[in-house]
Structure formats: C-alpha cells, structure tokens
Length: 545
Image (cartoon, rainbow, N blue to C red; front, top):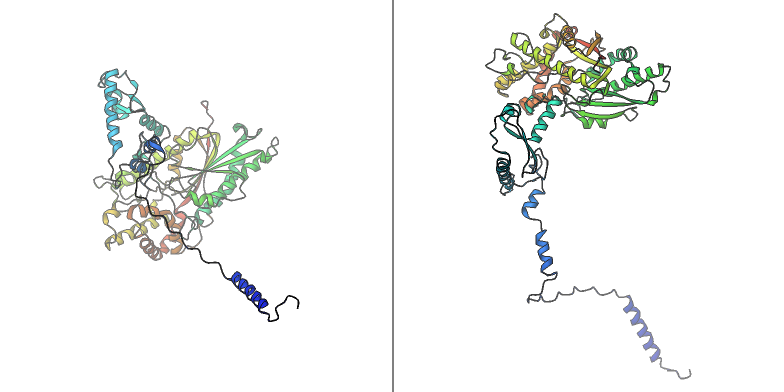
C-alpha cells in the first residue's frame, strides 16, 4: 500500500478513538448539582420604594380590627353602624372570643350623647308636653330621628325613637304581623323525601284532594266569572295560591286540577277559543320553616304555570291587594296560630292538665280553643279580603266534627288521647318531666260545620257558595297501627322535638304504635264520626271595589 503502515498501528488507533467517542456519547448526562446560595450580606441596604411608598402601605394596611370586621360568625347576628342590619357591618368585632373591645358600643353611646346635645341646643329640651308638637332633626348619628312628645309616647313606646324603628313597626302592623311575640307559631311537616317524611306519608291528604277534584271543576265552571276579572277577552295572568302547601307532591296535583278546569272554561267561552293565551302563576305558600327546597326540587317538569314560593303565615297578609283569582287550602285551617295561653297557665281555671287537646272536660279549655280558632279564622278571611279579586274563589278542605258529637268521641279524639297517654307513661318512667307533659297542648281545633258557617258569615266580603261533606276514598279502608303512626308522625314530629327535644322522639312513636294496636277496634268504630268538609267561598263584589 502506498504511503501506508504495514503494521496497522495507525488504523487501530483510529478505531479505538472512534469507539471511545461513541461510548462517551452514550453516557447519561451528569446530574445538575444545586448551586449554593451566596453568603448573606450583613450590611444594611437601602430599602426600595422610598418613604412615600412605605407611608402609603401603612395607611392602607389591613389592621386587626378591620380583619375582625371583615369576618362573620355563623349563627350570630352581626351588629352594624345603623339599625336593623343597615349601614356598615361590624362582623366579629366585639363578639365573644375576639378579645377586642366593643368599640362600636362606645361610638354609639358617644353619638347618642352628641345627638342629644345637638337637639337640646338647636331645638330646645326634649321634655315638651304638648301633644301637637313633633320635631324632625338630622342628627350626627347619621340617620333621621323623629322626636315625638310624651303625648305619643304610649303609641311608640318612648318619647323619642328612631324613625326606622317606627316605620318598621308600622310596616309590620300594616302587613298584619304585629310584634314578634304575636307572630303565629310555626308547625312545619317533616321535610325531605325519607321514609318518615310528609312527602312519603301523605296519602290520606291526597285522598281528600281527589275527593274534591270534581267539586273544584264544578266551582270553576259555574261560579268563576272571567269576564268580571277581565281575563276572557284579553291575554293576562291567572293567579292561584295554595296556602299550606307543605313539601309533598299533593299540592302539585291540586294546582294542576285547578289549571285544567280554568283552561276548560276558556275553551267553552265562544269569544276566547285559545286557552294558551292565558298564563298561570302559582304561589306555593307555607310557614317559614317549611321545606321549600324539597318542594321545588320535585316541581313537575311538564307544568304549564310559573311557580313561586311565598313563606309566611296565612293568618296575615301574604300578597298585594286584589292579585289572587283562586285560593286553595287543604288540611291547614284547623291549625291554630298558637296554643291559647290560658290553658297552659297553672293559675288559670282553664288550665288543661288532663289532656293534650280540646276534650271539653274543662269548660274553660273548650272556650279558649274556640276563641282562638274564631280569631284565627277572622284574621284569615280579613287577609284574603284584601288579596282576592272581586269574584275570586276560595276552596277550603278541612277536617271537621259533625254537629252534636263531642270531639273526644271521634276517631281523631281517640288518637290524640292515646298519644297523650304515651307521654304520661314516659313521664312516669322518668324519661321526660311531668311539667313538660302538663304544659304540652296540640295547636289544633276541629270545628263543627255550624261553627264554620257562623264564622264565615261574620265576614261581609265572602259568600258561602257551597259547603258539604266529602266522601273520602280511604274512609272505609282498614288501617294498621303502623299506618296510623306513619301518617301521624310527619305531622307531629316537629312539635314533639320543639317541646320535648329530639332524644325520645323514636321512643314516643314506638310506644304510640303499641297503644294504637291495643285500641284499634275502638278507633275503627269511630272512623265515621269525623268528616272532611268542602267549603267554597266567593269574594263579593262591593261598591268600594
């Protein structure tokens, strides 16, 4: 070979060099070692930003007081710089556990002193006795204050009150609520959709609605005048309210029945062939504690109406004037707004120590229950007088007692007596106190048809168009002791919890089932001694309307 190396040493060295390079390329990359931080410089350095920026940060920094004011504690009412929750809220500032001074209390006291001095300086002494004088002043407390002389002190509670308190009180009186002590008591049914809920155990209430279905159709066909309401020639909205809707599905079927009857009437009108031109608004109303969540979760998807919830007691105003065309109420009006006070007073001759309901054994007890029911029905009708349009209808389905039969002799009376005996037995066992048992009374009154007719006739704005007994489809159906308990528990459980606590609820209803089984034959004999009453009222068209 020309210019070659016969020994091959050069070629072998080239090959070895190439092999070493390939092996080097195939080696993994070396791991990166953490770079050590530089040694901190102990010498002070000039802060960035300057004095002006530092001062601005200090000025707008969030202080400890502001942090507390920005926080709220669950279940505790927040105080504010104004009354009734208006103005700037104080959050947790000054509340127990915050370890901070109640600064706002001192501020309010100081503001009150300044306001007093301001009024005395500019408007004279506040001890004026003239009943014709009143003074309106803008005070340093940052609200309007109406100074009322002593002539009006009894009406407003003091010689000088904040105008917002006065307006709030007048607003409650206008809506029929009165003060907090006079608010109707709330007795909600058991919510949810569990095995012991009202939604799953209200078949008997569904039965009375089914029995009234045809009567409601006849009432709308024969008694509802759409011409007077202005709904026959033009498009509009027909407003329906179910008072005492609870949380079960029964209210949906009742509202659907009413709407179908109105649509059928529209078709029958020669001048209004298109029922879809009329829209429907349904108001579902019950007490504030009612389970509206379950109610609206189970709203029918195919409904032909707009739905709204209206919480509150129907013993006061719930709606604006003349806005309702049809009102429906099922198994609700026999619930009293509250238990008569005299029957729970040991010093009263009407003290109801022998029973948990209106037995009539003590004359004063029956009179107290009857008087409470009379006042409640009067309040109910007075509120509906304002809300129902002239010519509008009210349907009331209520559990009543036949004329001439004492309530304790009925099946419902026996059921209540058995329930009361269970409570007495548990008091003897030491599980609940006797004082609790003696002070427990059911807020229920079952009137007779004659009583109801008399009470309704006192109201001059409604006429009784129809009142008759319903043929309940489950009246002759045999019930077991468990059936009675499952129907009663969703109705009474919340009352028991409120009075006796939650600890012995299951035990009470377990004992109740056993006692019902022992008295089942007596109850079955008296099932026909209680009646379901259908009442149809029509709003009278008066000159003032």
